[in-house]
Length: 186
Length: 378
Image (spheres, one colour):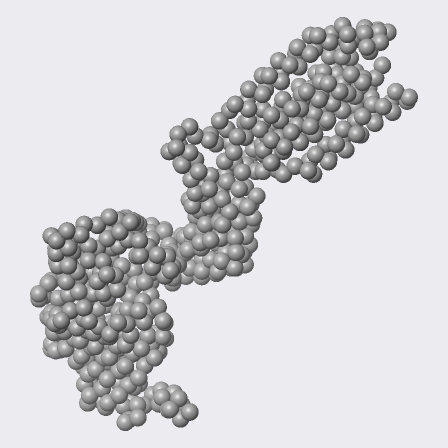
């Protein structure tokens, strides 16, 4: 009984057990209008006996622009602007997707874009949000509320320090996972 | 007055017979009866699809003339209303164009729908492509579908179906790409050529739209089923108008010529009787009577007016009815036989609806000629 009540109370107060102020953390994230970073990504698949690595650049601009440019080993650009997703692989023609038409994809995008935007209320509409750590080293746990979305994303973890986001980990329904180490650029 | 009794009695009896016949028969309004049956296997398949294929029950709905968010709301609410009506097997207007179970069915039959190569070089190409997908942002899709489908047949199938379609989605509702019009797609459970069922479907659509609180928004409906229904409505209206106008004109003409309600009654009785007999004959032959055959058939049976008119017209003053009958009988019978033969040629038509019309007219003429026309007032 207590176990059921505990997280509810913690969210109500927007404080994790060890005193992380979730409201303040989100406000700090929301205060950054633009972020540039490089990333190194590691993907682990149950179907493959070794991880796949890639590197590239990230750009976020408030409120809803996000781009991920993979430089190595296979060039690809993923741009999300509002409700539109454009994916360009190598020299192929860009593929345009409407996020409104594919809610599970929107959930996946919002797991990354939501913490950067710092809008806690919006985040809670799509995910059950947990927080751990302190301002000096925090982790947000996001679990999609919509069971359809859970097919693309079982769980997301976004971690960082202060108002910097330093890592994103996405776990698929089948346990495959994707870990991104992020190094912010000035 | 003494003479009025048998004439009015005959008209009354004929009227009762017609009422009985009309309550007995099943009236069909399926417009496919007026499409040809097809001479070859392929033509028959196409006709079968045109009559009852999955596309015939498709109805396209557009909602426009309101703010975008409002249109999306009306569209979603209308779709919910349509689903609740139970008249539609598919109501689509939002995200899930393909239900999960349908997606799984298609995936299970992917190599029947899109043949794939399984030789070594082709599989190698497929697997290399799969690896590329696993490195890309579409990796979740690749693990969901690609691992079980190295040749990529399912993806190719979906891409070929999507084609160049450019539907936008706003708040979970489909919109036309170039204007503010919410789009819904519905498929009726009944066939598209079943006009009565389509009328019910249209009523359900309009009710669902009104229940959604449309405000200033406007509903547009199109689709094969809607065209069939409109065509049936137009035919019904034409038949009704032709029947009314021609009945009135014939009555006027007869009144002008004979100036006797009794003569008109005597002339009407065989016509009414012939319609009753014809309807029963077609019902017996086809198990139903098409509304169009009934309408036009009744109009064609107007020629049976001629028979009593001929009798009355050829009768000399003071001549007994039997004498007139004997005098013009052979020529009269010849005329009736040629008319029946001429009309029954329609039975050979490739259109079931026209064949019905032929039986209707031929079966109606015989009793009209045989019976009460001869019992005219003296």
